[in-house]
Amino acid sequence: MFSRPISRSALLGVAGLLTLGMFGCGGGTSIDKPFGTNPNDTNHQRVFNVLIGSPGAGVNITQRNQNINPSPLSFGQGTSYATVSSGIAIKTDAVQAGTATLIAPENSVTMTRDFFYTQVITGVAGTSGTTAPQLIQFSDNFPGAIASSSAVVRLIDLSPDSPPISLYNTVGTPPTAIAVMGLGGVAYGNTSGNSSSAYVAVTAGNYNLAVRDSAGNVVSSLGAATLAGGHAYTVLVYGLVSPQAGQPSAQSLLLTDK
Image (cartoon, rainbow, N blue to C red; front, side):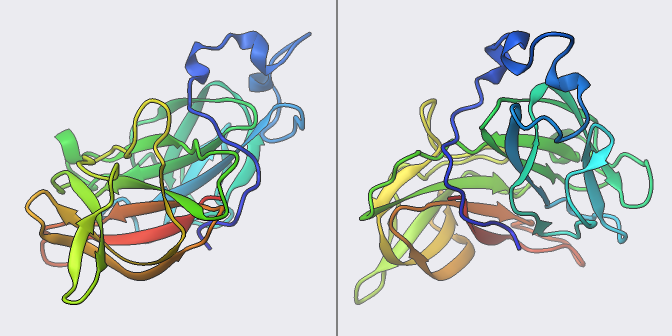
């Protein structure tokens, strides 16, 4: 339920530098228009709830006072990409389902036409500082054209107590864990990559993937995975490396972005 293939290119989130004229003309901008109703000024967005201690009724993530998710999100749940309106300084809230109660500070995001985005709520409910609940937006800047012999992958760290993490592939006999170049040292709340792309190209095929810390300890294991040629993937890590009683341990999702 987390993702589906997308055929359009997504670029980096430089929209904050763009002028209001990019988003509309005449009597107003897309900010003034109802949610998702301007076909000429839309982008694609998906949402995830990985907040430790999420309310039992679930979480709704809203923009322009409307839910992005069709039904409340329990911990670890997310959505496929939906088409929503673009705009500047769009107020984004995470609320307890069925109420207007904020469970994280309100966020303000900018989304550019035809871009792809992932919006998450993460952190640990009832805490402050670095583990406090927060909304984070990621720009899903996967390449528009990917060779049929290759796939592209990025790593996102949403585990509030994790050290910097890296993606490894285990190969050979005896099994040897080898770091995937470019997908290392990712800190909480961040994604892999650089200013041009968060994604790293790898050879398409079968993998045995695990997420490890800088000492080589396994944080979470994805196990056997097939990375198909021409596709883009995200490895999303959430939960806690050192959970207390009743808290979820660190785990990973392999999402198909394109």
